[in-house]
Length: 476
Image (tube, rainbow, N blue to C red; front, side, top):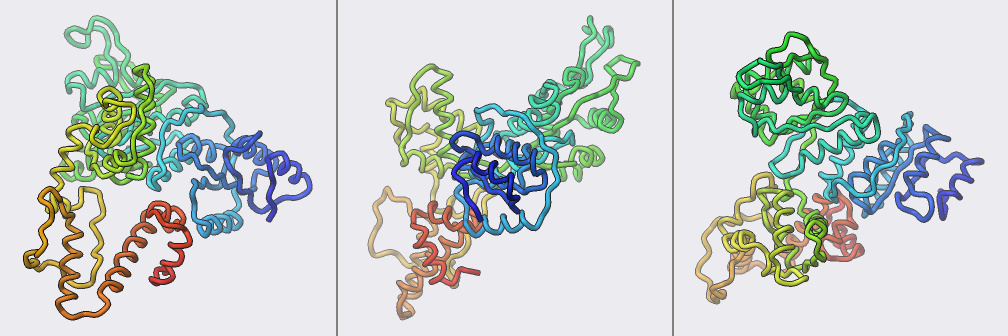
């Protein structure tokens, strides 16, 4: 293995030596990792290149894949996983064409969560394709942003012929008007049609048509859409001349289309036509680690829009935000940040400055409500072996009336009481081992085995987590 201080030294070494795999950072003094990738691929097209970056944004992932990278490795990463990836890169031989082009500096999307990194990778791999894509996810998760990114990084977008991106929300337009909106109409086709009008398919010619909330499209229009996707042709309302549809279709929905098909309100053949490639966007509650980064991004964006100084937010306020369920997802977080920019009384946002609905939600989080996980979350893993459903006797020491005891602490109290009253020895060590083991197991599960990242999230050192894994027998 050889290391180099900069990209120029590496390029000089390639004149006399060809490595099995190259690992490069993306942002370096002088030549960037993406520029280096382009030069290396021009000279050695089959050399696997792994791009590392601490910047967890969409452009980094897309740039890497468009340049022909073998894989994109966001920091911090687990060393064992990195070694495994390098071994896999050595075993495989890639033969990809270089897709050159510069990307804008401002990131379109951000996300450190593994689920978002998977989305970024998918966009990168789809960047040179015109295949139909179906984007699913709850309202407010950013489906239109993903559609924009798929267009922008495709041959039809900014890196190609600069075709238009045209969006239409099929649920927001009355059924009587939707057909005309999609396909256009001829003059005199119906009362009020005084001129010929181009529909969205014509407006998107050479580009991308984004059909939002496709699950709510009227059934009879689904038939016409299927015909366009199958034949590549359509007719304006009242027209007799077929028109060619040179568009890439990206559809999105928050609905369960499989269930809609079973109910008979969505055509099964259209579903299969749209469902060529599916991208699922995670809810914000599934990527809580991204909330601090997104909050600061939105606070800065709101400040620029309003022409004021960006406000800072305390760690305590961020923790309250991370505990919130965000039924409106990223869109709701952005609205909250805009509200805080206007309404927070000082430049530093405290927890007490958060919007009333967020504070009310925290007060309403009783032990009974906390016991049931929200939709999409994993159910809590039981921390103890014995059943914990018996009703505990009254506590001899009363908690302060304003305190709200989480359900898991009540479970811990019941288990401790059961063991102590049963005369069990070394209760402290036994429960502490199970508690620590379950914490570390969950952190490793969330970080997909990346120990350094798991330690950072738990607030312990990497030596501590390594020692605990060995002590608790969690290596397997």
